[in-house]
Length: 637
Image (cartoon, rainbow, N blue to C red; front, side, top):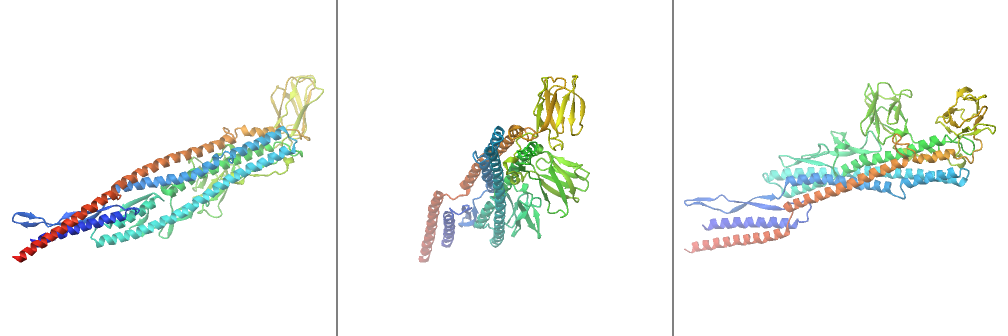
């Protein structure tokens, strides 16, 4: 009996000792990241059979259990990876928002100052200081375009840097998880399947850290290891083996770094739209959804402004009597050959309609039968079986492919506007070359007897007619019969017996004007070159009118309205990400709170357990003492 009581006391003593050790372990790891509190699972020993029934034989520690909820942990991983993605995206787009919305250093003040200077030239066309102010403000506007584009290019480089550093961290975590998988497999084998709780906590914490970088899924294996998958099911850890991610240059756009998975000595590109979580997903989403579009949109404003301004400027005459030059440099579409293309393959593309330009990039491809031009934003496309040429271009959204030497299954990326803000420049430095005047003067003969008047006239459009500044004479028939003759040099001249309609357009040599009122027999009107137009502001007025003219979005928006729309889009997206990232952060905090309430260490509870297990230890010691006393009594009989 003494030995039986002694065994029971010893079992209780050992069980209480295990409880005290685990409680102490919990307390000492209260600040250990990823630690889940543990508890000893106790079980009664197999009872002894006697005539009267079963007599208990004490207790033993069956297992050490982690207080852990796989459901809460999985939920936390999903919430956390999305929260990190939103936070990263918001941090980046906030920089864009600050740049575009800045009241003093944004584009709007520079645009306003430029057109105000043009209005000053229109008011004082012969004043050199006004002309110089116009050129200075043109330079300031160009500088603003270029500095904003440079800032976005720096942000693109920053995205590439973050992608590189994230991939290094992801590979490091994958390596550590694979190593711990191996340790867990060995530990469970040695213990007969008992879970190595501290190793499991370390692995869970690594997976938790990994999910902050990229969306992560795990699948537990029968040997205790877990396989880890990123993106859309791409394995980076399989048991104790790990695969590596790698940063690679995008085969379609060498300015961008993207992700590749190294497998069997080859690198497979991962589709960026499958990386939807973590800091990596957030930075890729920012580049794809915000940065690319913003840079294209700014370039579109720059290119359209430069082109439409150039077109109008070339319709005027400068102080030297010459037709206007292009004031701004206009960038050409950027064409990128895919890395898999033949080196000799090439295409030619140009802008055929600046007003129809979008902010999208385009892909030109050939499948062996059809040549296809695709808008990458909405996937709209046009196709032709004929090789595009200048005579038969392939056109979509104002972009035309006018030549192609391309093999089947090859592709080209076309970015019509990405370099628009970067490449804009002022071509004129001499104030006398500002074409503020109209190219021709109109006049009525002093001997005219009727009430007819002739307008100042305007140039039709580019290209200029070579006879634009050839003198013309309009003479009404005598006796008056409602007709007139036009004499001079040019296509269709001389023109006789032209029917007169008051106020109707009359156009010769690419120059349009109107005669109103009632001319008399023999009345004469002339159109002559504007050889002395220092005080003429007709073209300057038309240049200034471009500020409020709808030249963008297929003739529905002005430069400033289009830029304001861009600022609004960035601002709305920034606000949206701000709200959703805060909401996601609150959800993450609630989830972590639930995990902590279940698995976290509570010092008050552990202190109470220490006292309870201490008392159990002391009570078991007392049982051993009583067993010893009973044994001594037996020896004295």
